Length: 166
Image (cartoon, rainbow, N blue to C red; front, side, top):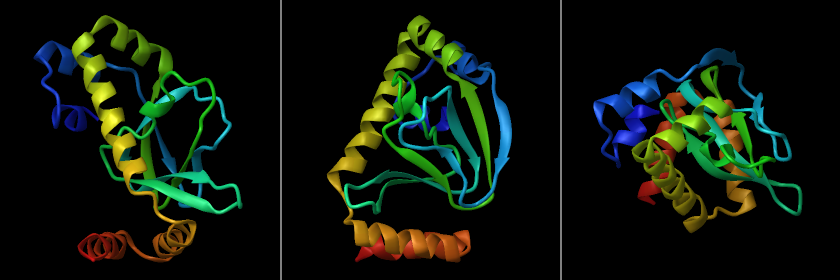
């Protein structure tokens, strides 16, 4: 998470240490499990330590639409930091380790440290911009989900690279 924030924002060493000092709980999740579902009440924000996940929404027709592919180091739940109800789901694609950060300590940190707050807002806006500027159709999302569930991570990365070049 810190690496992601530093990729677009300058943080002092004190701010970096404050992020490192946030309380976390590590947990392992299996492929196909959900970190959060649409309509759930979020209690924490999560960082993907290892593995792959996707952010998705269910369309009006009941199909799943992939909004983002999450890779290790991604803070995959900043969107839910201040929302009372999640408007998306996070599904785990491969065996993964997640670091859960309780919402309250993270919210307090953002209120106390403007540079970290700006970095989190920046990160969230970048992600939202990417998710909504290229909206794949439901059929593409379903095909990508099928590929992801049947392929090892290396094949997934190769397929995503090929799709970007096309």
